[in-house]
Amino acid sequence: MHDHFLLFIVTNQSGVATGRLTEAEAMAVNDHVIERLRSQAAEIEASYICPHSRAEGCACIKPKK
Image 1 (spheres, rainbow, N blue to C red):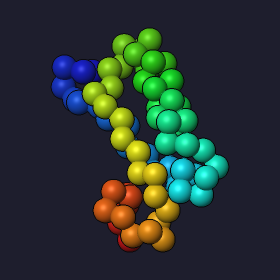
Image 2: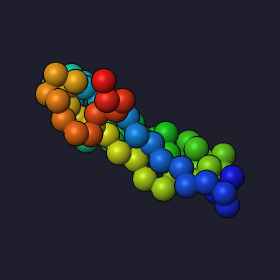
Image 3: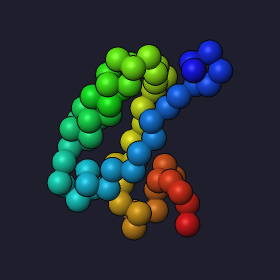
Image 4: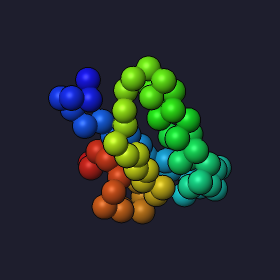
């Protein structure tokens, strides 16, 4: 699979903006997912989070509305 595609994890984590979790905790979840996928031979290039709420109007939240 990795020979043909570069795989990334991109998530919105508005819980960071509301204080329900820290950015480090959100990244730790992504790291866990990456390790689980790696154990199944799926290599993730990188993971990214948007730690903002949609109301903040940031540039990184997806999808744009």
